[in-house]
Amino acid sequence: MSRKSSSQLMIRVVLFLLLTLIIAPIIYAVLASFKTNMEIFSSPFSLPSSWNFENIVNAWQVGNFQQYIINSAIVTVGGMFVVALVASPAGYAFSQLTFKGNNLIFYIVLLGMALPVQAIIIPIFFHLRSMGLVNTLTGLTLVSAALALPFSIFLMRNTFRDVPKALRESAMIDGAGEWRIFWTVMLPLAKPGLVALLIFTFMNIWNDFLLPLVLLMSQSKYTISLGLYSFQGEMATNYSLIFGGTVISMIPSIIVYLIFQRSFIEGMSSGSNK
Image 1 (cartoon, helix red, strand yellow):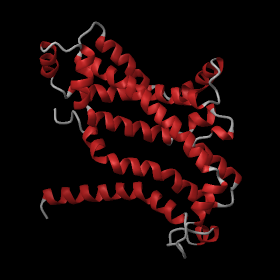
Image 2 (image 1 turned 120 degrees about the horizontal axis):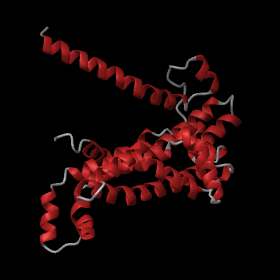
Image 3 (image 1 turned 135 degrees about the vertical axis):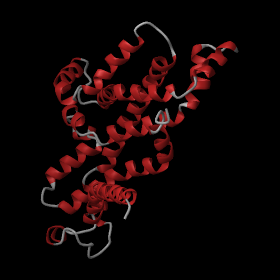
Image 4 (image 1 turned 90 degrees about the vertical axis):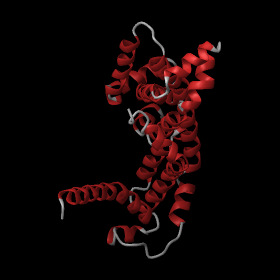
């Protein structure tokens, strides 16, 4: 076997192991959602004895997952809207416009990516409380969007950098203003990056656990991740229902990714051809 073939075989083995590590927990959770408690403990890696949706249905009815999904949808869609509204023009400005302090301001924004949320969660809580936004979906939405902005601006800056500046200059010669250039010329060309950004934001906010845990107190305001946690506490011995709820929480993320996967990959690979 040649050195090139050995290298390719090694890469495939590594990729297969990585794929196994990623997909194994998902398969295990799905299979466990069809099992009884006894089956989960007696034969955790076998197929279920019967394929019925009783655990998922019970998790939906007993765990109040309908309300949790509505709350998660409100927070996630609101956060995506705020992120897109702020990160898109900011990324355009940092990549296409020339103004004093451009790089300095951009690097200060990037510092937010190095700031762990655990380090600032207490100040955030007291700040929100002073504004009366603790235990509200509005407060959770704003905080989630704000924490997502540094990476979002970084991603949109890279996306807009792929758009030739000559297009902007041509539009200016034709008499278009800066906002018209942004909305009608640049933003449509940056669509793959914007879609990737929205999917990233969806995944992060939808699956977030720490912020809802700290900022929400009323069970009626719980998001799906926090609802799953409280459901686990109430049904500590009924793991079949817990896995049923886990499957429910995964479905929206999988659907969103399957619908927009092509745009997501295009957006994430933007700039790699430079």
